Length: 152
Length: 156
Image (cartoon, rainbow over all chains, first blue to last red; front, side):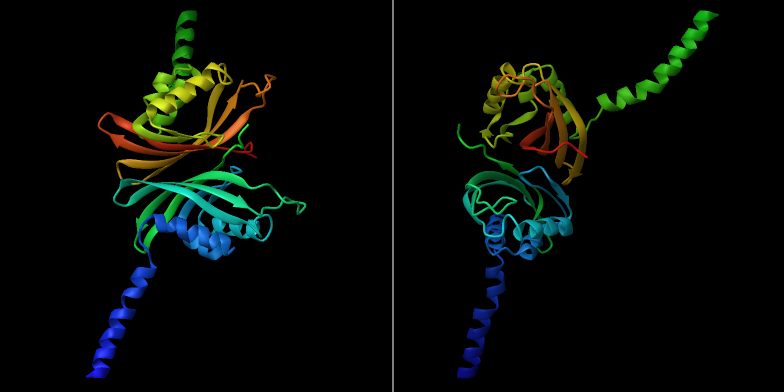
């Protein structure tokens, strides 16, 4: 009896876990992006994009498709972004329809170095993310980053 | 006779060029918004530019300013077109469209702007950028619900 009870308890405890871990709101993409960025894990960052995604970075460089996006993130996270910390200051969500969302992620980044290894001042930006709900959950279909000009 | 030859030549030339002119002027899907944006920019008609946006649209400028709603998007473009962009010309280099069902689309509109002086008033270089646009089909037609601009390097 006790064993059965334990088994039932264990099942109810364990089974919902994967569901809880996979937070299936589009905003969870932002949480996971920030976490993967700060862990400098390009594979985890790449997993957030749909296979045929587009990504235009703050320098206007356009990567097409998850492998290319991942490769570029890997290159930057072994060089200028190696020691960076990304902080989300605000995210606004707008649903276009049930399976399409637009998010504006406002961010700040510190710890960047230039090509000579010299520290770069903390900078700010805004990323427009278009997310779509796919079979395995929300993915980034298209994202574009813009630098916020420092106040004059 | 000479007139006939001229006439034939003219119709051949028109025949050659009109399909191009027609296809450029008659984009009907979400791409028509890009045509509308270029026309409004180059005629510096910011009311027409504003009308391309939904009432509650978002626009992130090249400098990373986030304008919310059609009135602000229009007002900020009015300001820049009374100043730096007064005599500027916008040209489309390339636009890609990805449909998200029949009523929404994501576009990447690559552009260049010439004739805008640098902020210090001297002759400016040609600016290049990419505009990331989300378009939705409303009762009146396609409108921009969200757009973001980013500076880019000249295409190689």
